[in-house]
Length: 128
Image (cartoon, rainbow, N blue to C red; front, side):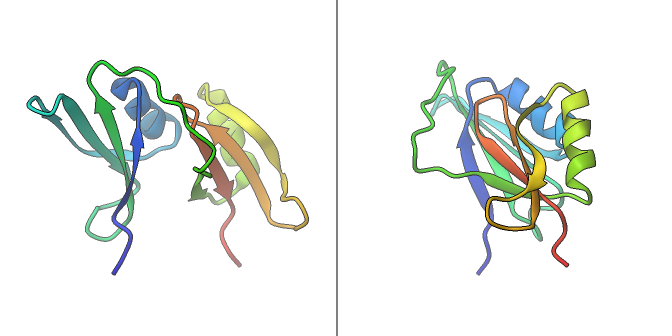
C-alpha cells in the first residue's frame, strides 16, 4: 500500500495551479473537466503519480471559497534549504505564515507558507 494523493478543494483552479507550479515548482500532471458533475480535477506533484504521492486540486464549478475548518493540519514538503526556499517563495509572491527557524521545543528548521486558498504548507529540510 502507498498514499496516492491528497485532495484539496480550491476556489480558483487556475490560481491554485499557478501557485503549486510557479511558486512551489510542482508540475501539472493532468487536468480533466467533468461537466456532468460540474467539477474539474487537476493533479500536481514533483514526480510521476506511479511512484510519488501528489495533490488533487478539486474545483467545484461556481464555488469560490471553502471554510478550512480546524481538523486539517498542513501539507509538508521537503526542501534542500528552508531559509532559501522561503525566500524564493516570498520573491515569487508567496505568503510566509511562519518565518524559517527551529520548531517549537525542537531543533528541526521549519517554515510555513500559505496557498491561495489558505492551506498551510510546512517546509522541512532533508532528514539527516
